[in-house]
Length: 329
Image 1 (cartoon, rainbow, N blue to C red):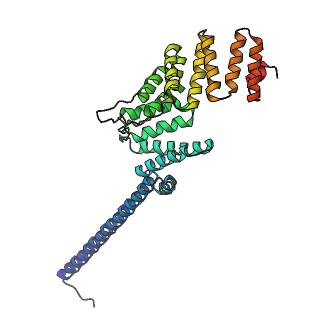
Image 2 (cartoon, rainbow, N blue to C red; image 1 turned 90 degrees about the vertical axis):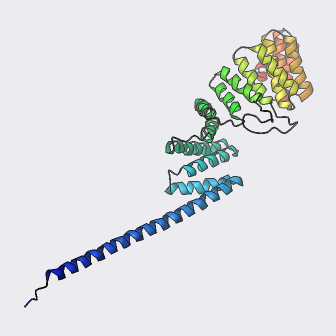
Image 3 (tube, one colour; image 1 turned 30 degrees about the horizontal axis):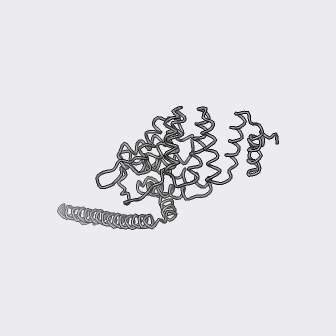
């Protein structure tokens, strides 16, 4: 027959089972916590090493290594803010190093994709580097994206990110969207950066004592913007300044061509002639200068001299289209 157990025996057995179950549950919870801490610790250690590696490559200028590492890591961590920024910055550096324009655009698109995604991931970010590089990337992308270049470069300035080339890029971008007033303002700031008592400019960079920085392109860009606004007098002043201060022969030639055109339009044919002849005298034979002299003499009714200049232009550059048209060739 079955033995009848006392109620206390059953209670003791149940309590033991409950105790064992609690111990097992606590054990597994502890195991999970320990495993989680170890995994998290390893993840942090691995992530920390990964960041150090990326930063080391960046400091060494190994942008291709940064690009490849971040591209690989983003496959598993597509919303990692640090990886997105690093990938975008490396993409831009690789873009400007390309010779082929189509290759440049591939990296530019990668840069824009990565940095805009970073802005979506961290909408509260106040890092001026992101809109700064995005603005330059959109400028490199082409004229059709100049409005976006302006937008992001202005955002960079709003958060006081004053890299030295921000005004220059803003001036170029504003000119592309035909906002010549703002273009002039930006170019003028680039030409005359604000300095503190120690010689630091707005970007925080220190000008070496006695250093001469090329200003040719800025002067020419300001002059072009004034010409678009039909302010030829002010444009002339900047062109003359470029001619007087530039050490680059090509910049001087460009300035003289622009100045010659301004003088022609104002009716000063003698002044225009001096500019074109000076180009030939100082920079050597120039097909465009001879062609323009031919046009100038033709407007003065001197057919013989004009045809001589057009033929000279053809001799220097047989592919000169306008000279060929003038000579019916």
